[in-house]
Length: 217
Image 1 (cartoon, rainbow, N blue to C red):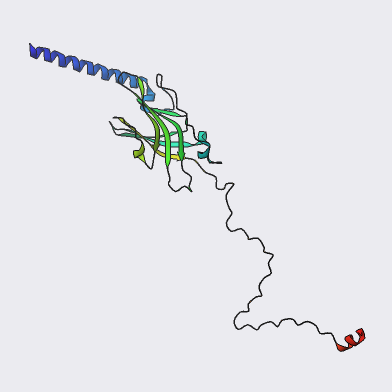
Image 2: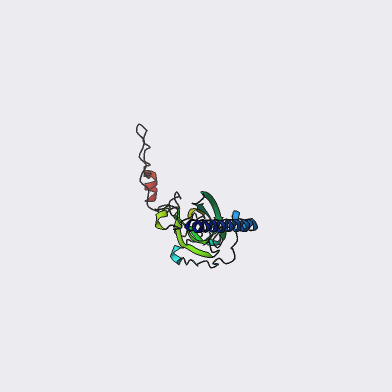
């Protein structure tokens, strides 16, 4: 009796697993966006992207505006080893299967800064077995310091690879190097003759003649 009961339970489990697998396959066939990177937001996923407030002191005049920057993110499915590159502008989102990656901002330090840093504010949403979307990560990710913040998820990993932006070459406090110095009004020192050169005799003042002196008296 116990053997028959165990066999019935195993058969029911196999049937349920096969039915779930068939349903998942049918959903993927009916949803082409699940097999490619798409710049779409799926229904039911959280659609709010947190606003990143950058202080006025952090903004460099003349740098690329946030809306025109382009970030490249890496996405890894640790279950099947599938690695993708996702290119987004701030405010954009991309879907790959059951994961949605959003980019709210990307930033990098100026070339004249002592320590280079490249970062992006990323949000990750994953669709679970119950077909519900849940946000599993929201925060800054840094290329040079990945340990500062990581996406803690058993299946998906996301990291920042680059942030394309430019900085101004000059600013209001830039000093030009190599410009001609201002002329000095101080008297110049007499030129020193080169060794072996014949010195030029100094001009002697004219002495009035005796005839001119007698006529003056």
